[in-house]
Amino acid sequence: MGDRVVVTDPRGRRHVLVLESGKAFFTHRGSLAHDDLIGQPEGSVLTSSGGTTYLAMRPSLSEHVMTMPRGAAVVYPKDAAAIVGLADIYPGARVLEAGAGSGSLTSFLLRAVGSTGSVLSYERRADFAETATKNISKFFGGRPAQWTLVVGDLAEATDLPPVDRVILDMLAPWDCLDAAAAALEPAGVIVAYVATTTQMARFVETLRVDGRFTEPQASETLVRTWHVEGLAVRPDHRMVGHTGFLVVARRLADGAALPAKRARPAKGAYGADYDGPASSHPDEPAGSDDAASTERPRRLGRASAIPKRKGRLP
Ligand SMILES: C[S@@+](CC[C@H](N)C(=O)[O-])C[C@H]1O[C@@H](n2cnc3c(N)ncnc32)[C@H](O)[C@@H]1O
Image 1 (cartoon, protein in one colour):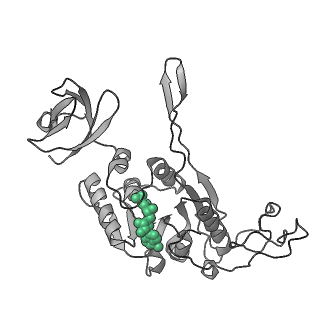
Image 2 (image 1 turned 180 degrees about the vertical axis):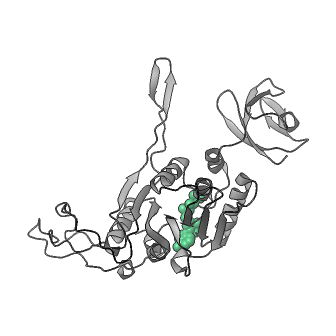
Image 3 (image 1 turned 120 degrees about the horizontal axis):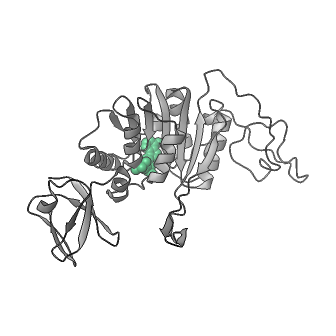
């Protein structure tokens, strides 16, 4: 009763049901009584009044996040899996996250840290915090004990507890760098998930300028599903072409400075046309590849010196 079940018809179409005694699931292929499902083991196959068979199982977390109500856009399972891996999240880890949005990524984080870890989520919109709470409670059968949700802006948070990992999924993750750096233990991992190349570049350059983090790594995760049937073995015609980019770095110990990079920036990378955050590159003055480029990039100190454009795409 009240459990969510996914029923899949022979054509692979899935329907999510919330089981309730006396109710029925109706399609043009007949009806399926909820009472016939209640008490059955997962993986059972039931036949509707119209003779169509349905495979019944509880939704996996991936299925849950793809079908649950959304306030904000969710992190897809492929990216959540990459985040858990690249952020090196383990049972017992203390994770700080913002924003919780619809609660998709939070659910994957809660599972990864397990009952001995903790997830502290910040979400600045109360309505999204409520959606996340409902979605997470529905999946876990109640509010997980290892989860704390704060309705507020992480960029303005003070007195954060020490954490092992920081995960940012928001428009302007650079605004939260001071909070992240204050909370992260030395060698702790920070991961930002951003939707556009301009956000990715700005976050990477901001991390470099900041000086409290290792050289960031940027990536995206493409998953291509395949049709496998006899001799017809080929990629599916459709795929999710784009979701977002991941930027990963680690916190240096206080007072530590990264050894100077041995590789020079690409020619012109910080030339006259570049106007984002930039650290000094003594080996490669801006515009050195181009006699006409005399303008130098802005030399900035820490993240706080970077102009903030809250809530807007860069
Ligand atoms: C794309 S959504 C997050 C989706 C979420 N990770 C999920 O998988 O369902 C981005 C969220 O970040 C929140 N947000 C943006 N900046 C924030 C900040 N500085 N502090 C807290 N929340 C923030 C927004 O209100 C929004 O709900």
